[in-house]
Length: 168
Image 1 (cartoon, rainbow, N blue to C red):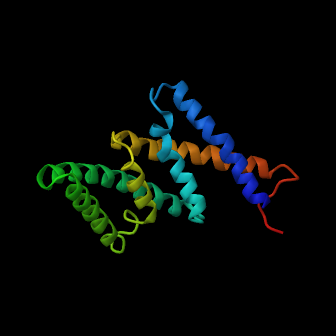
Image 2: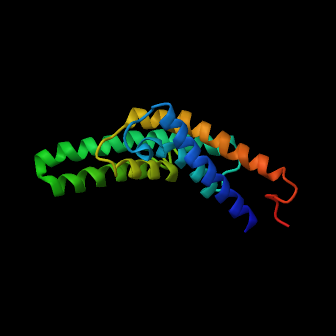
């Protein structure tokens, strides 16, 4: 329970802090979360996925970039197919086809096509405006920044005598 509260406290501090820094730097003038969400996905998926090392983070970064590219591919496919077969069939064929191919590639290319990438892919599809290049940069640069401050704060907080991540 104490570990969960420590992680919750850390995320409650670092998420608004990261967004505030992005806003002060003028990185995006619209909904800041529409711009920064890929950075937060990295740390959240690292924690949820039970990752333990740099390789786990690399899998998230690579799959995240792949998922973001897949999102723009899906949006493009739907738009193209909707013009040919209508909006409902275009959505069904575009979404179904990109999901099928993505999942089919999970076994042969697991570093790029995995469950983490699916989350990036499907989340990016929620936005009418695809910001693929920006999101890929936020995934990498923002994700590294967010991971460093989040896990740095956890490390700092665990140095306080009353707080520990070790289970007893």
